[in-house]
Length: 411
Image (tube, rainbow, N blue to C red; front, side):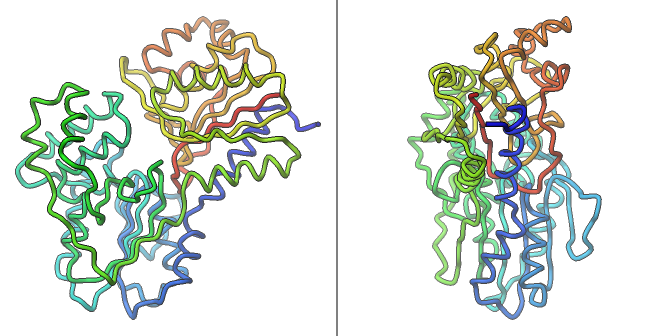
């Protein structure tokens, strides 16, 4: 079977996964099945916010009286049909706070005749944010930094963030009363409940205090219990007019990746469980899987999820590149195993890369340049190591976000 270099194959599969989750088309498809109101206000939040708002304009343009986009980047070809604001990610800062207050103000006098089309994607936790009234912006930002450096899972983090927020856990929905609301959600989480996308600004909070206490205790924050207890949100009663539709997810992207590999003539295997936990541990697990399967090639193994990184250094990189570098260490010298790990949003951590590529020569290639890959791995500097040998996957911001994908090629 002639398919070129395994890296090229993995990148082609990756691009297919990304294309399957493009939000503009997903929004078009969803809105074409919904009765269009006479007029509506569009609030689009997250990494895919601009593309989602464009999709709404394509289908419901005549009914949209206002369209506000809150996202993390400006495209080179800037559409004129939206008010676009750039927030801070992954830590909320002045831009996020200011833009979020503007959204809040612009939705503060809605009536029963109004409809809010709320378009939500991953990244909204820090982009659409301001603190609850009794805590400061700096304290909120400091807690975000603690969450991200702790190694806590995304579910754990999203259980705590709403308790410090003035907009999350249904607070935005309550604020928009008595208007109706249609939510289209591009999911970047592993949970079936769409609340977990950007900490549910317009959905009820599903976490109970005993679980919150367990999380606080696990990470040494139990002394701050009162701060979080005071942030338990009020119960949000569902409005019978509301619609909540998940328009895209990681599962759909994985299905698209697998279908493409099959069309290319490969046997495939799906990793059924989400790839979670520490990025370095996930890299080791995938290496063990590859070694176990290495006599079964050609084979494409596809999985996805969201790992975490416990910060110990001040390097550049992200969970996908750290996973790839860890994988490289474990398969050093192997000749038939290749891995691409990437974020569908095109941004991995604090680097310009979407993810990283690793094979049996990666570790020694880095060493040959006088760079210690072990040190880079331990100090969270995976981007430096992988960039040095050209083993990064670069897409730029993709306009979508359905979490991370891992493609293991066995030849």
